[in-house]
Length: 338
Image (cartoon, rainbow, N blue to C red):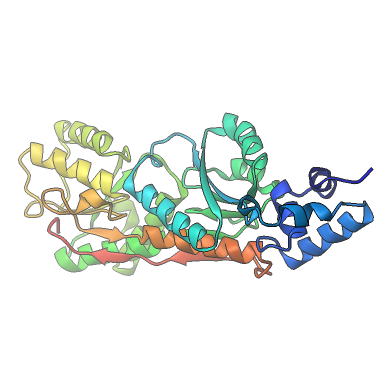
């Protein structure tokens, strides 16, 4: 009995999409994988006439690129323009490379196996995993997949996987140095109470600048606040009502924290930036529209998505002999909150 493409995929431990692409000599798999699939197909008697019959079908051109959006708690990853712009960048690059684009959501570790099973039962050719809230112990479950995988907006030192991330330390460094040069005082730190990797790297950049300017890290006023606008406002109001005197200037882990704190300060009669200056991070669309407009660190979000897809294409085409970490640079955007 002749072997089917589905049986070939099970035999070789490859996705059905990868086997289909290899059998049809389409882009999307490496040269080595294509040779392996063709050799096994010949060995086990695959009916190559099936390819000629269906070769005109546009449905089998390249398969799908699956973006998996992982949420551990949802405190950081939400339906915001930041993540929409990342998706737009991936989508545009998929279209240019003639791949379909689909999005899957995983909400917590208990959904990983079920959702991955759904993904692998499609024509998935490659996966981009949004790992903003992902923990390393959970990531190891994704590393076992036999599908090309790229990690977006995070990385882990102990794992070998291509990733595209923000240069968080650089962005925090630029923001903090600007505050010190502008006010000649030690800035306070509006730190997220959810310690994701991005925020930990921003803390590294913040404290690095302090040390370079001879300031003591241990003397820094740090406020642990929720990383949402409403949460940060509520947390800051509680501090102010408890008698906390605000610092002359602050760096915030993200724009939502910065804008929430600005609201809290203004409700207590403080003026921005006359009394307190604040810098955020991410340059979300509302940062320019708040009052006063927020000085922040710009992250080229759509470009990050495009870079991630281009790197995944290199992996799919066998043009990535080594894994790499790509860090996308940030830029200070000066507005009226400083």
